Length: 303
Image (cartoon, rainbow, N blue to C red):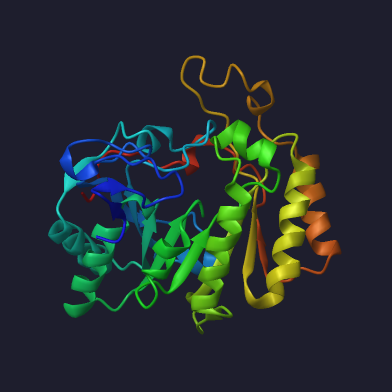
């Protein structure tokens, strides 16, 4: 398989070399078998993704980035989830369709890219006609993204950091910006300018998300300027205020700046900057979205 060298995994930029096909787990905390923590309708994505009917989200366990402040920490570190077959994943796609989902939303999928790609190919042969959303941290190898060309309709990547000091401190990934910007470039190459149907639901394109972190407004501005200078009005930029400080024990003891929500002033500063430089195709969040109710229960629903 294309992600293996001498049976060692190099599927993501970590290139950890784990022998996932013979019992080892990678940096992502994943082995060879798909692990899913939840598959259900989700109503808290951007309006053109969720709509009124909800997005058919499949949350995969494990993550190649594993930020210290992760709000889905239990699944990111592989503590929660159920092993399933590729065939079962195909069934889940159709079950979500039967529930009225606007799309199939693959959340943190990259470390299972090969199995997910097979499932999508099988599902499309069997008649799945929902749009597919690839929901990722953008810490992805370009070759992995290329492998989904023709299978994914909408890319929903993060752009978390510009400053390598921040990405090293919070995600152990000093190369994050270089990796993510290359991955997003490939996503935009594939999908081009976004398309919204007459019901307000996205059918094609790229939405880049940025979560504003405490005491990091200048980095947020650099990211937003980079995205707008590079892609203009071809993509949506989603500026998020929902950072929620959640930790177990002393998980954030070395990051005192992260042990609070962002202030209204911090968020408004970033949004005002986006408006000032001319961004029109964007999403912002209003009110108190930084609360745990926006974090789904990973209770194996739908798995």
